[in-house]
Length: 148
Ligand SMILES: C[S@@+](CC[C@H](N)C(=O)[O-])C[C@H]1O[C@@H](n2cnc3c(N)ncnc32)[C@H](O)[C@@H]1O
Image (cartoon, rainbow, N blue to C red; front, side, top):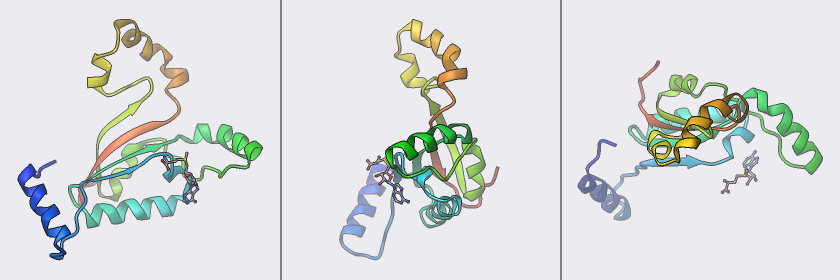
């Protein structure tokens, strides 16, 4: 983030004082976007990117290959169906986002991975073809005007 703590404090002060400023540094969605239609998701992400430049967005995505499983399970249990598949989070950069980092169960963030016991670090890549095809958690920065 390019803002200093002092700048963030000043922004919060202005917002609380109602001095006409509205800002956000982080938007997070966990297990929700995939239930929405593609145009709802892309519309919301593009609006956030345009309205809150430099903010961060963290959310999970699910590849199309997992939808058959979810729809079967949802039908059995009477749950909502996933509607928005995303095979590659990088494609969302077209909405004015820049992908900073993506993680999967088998490909955790570098800092987290470094703390794992060696046996897990070696085993995780081997498990990737099976366990790595589900959820991806990605962190983006709103960068209007940026396109890949
Ligand atoms: C797997 S849960 C995730 C819960 C979330 N992490 C939380 O802490 O509340 C999925 C959530 O998405 C909501 N949901 C499903 N379809 C939705 C829709 N079309 N619009 C809004 N929310 C929806 C469900 O009600 C549920 O709360």
